[in-house]
Image 1 (spheres, rainbow over the protein chains, first blue to last red):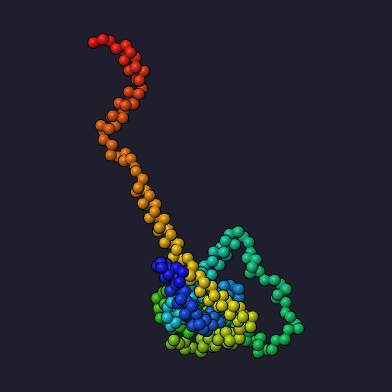
Image 2: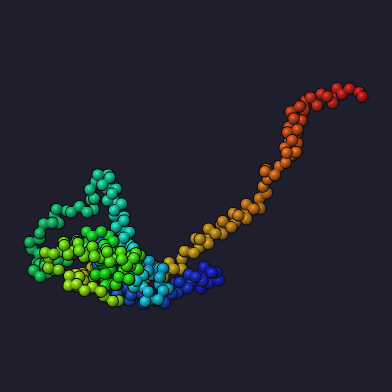
Length: 198
Length: 111
């Protein structure tokens, strides 16, 4: 304990000790939530790389700031951090789109290469798999098109299975607001996905 | 966690989502595992870092600046009285008429 004689040294020694002591539990916890977190971020952003960045940020923040909390608290905390990161992404994207619109340029990152849209005739795609993938893609696009708060309420309630109180806690708003956002999200999705066999 | 989702539509959406989670490709799973390991490794190292040193250093610098400032003698201009100011002005007049006083001393009339 090189810096153990100072308050700061003691603080860091204790914090590091907590992280190391909880490392196995943290590893298990993160392994249990990472896939769902990744899918939620991917649906929200539409980008695998952005989703991985968001999940990494959320994991890092949880480990850095809340490793000393009891494992029972990690779930809600992780959800709060993850949703906060997704909202940050939406904000940055909005600002960037406004900036691009002001400059009169098209967003080159989101431009689709025409070659990518050409069907691969040699590819083997079982019919059922196609149906499933297409259905999920349509669903994802519909969720992605929702306003950020509705999207957040929908993902937490419908996909993550949180109740109204837990969702309100993560979204930092009232339970009434959660109900409103969720109801609107479900209504829009019903309308858009009506013709698909979800 | 209590699941309050009741409608068939919502259940089917959740089912689709759960399927997509369980069928994630190997490449993505591998990247997620790598990320997790990186986070845990880095967190253990950086926790012994410097997060509290920065505010403590800033606090120490401010304290040092205050002590040094209080130790430097400061001339208090506001406390000068009217008489002090008159003295200063009269001294200035003396220096301005120095030649005259020298001449007066040399040519002083005998009393």
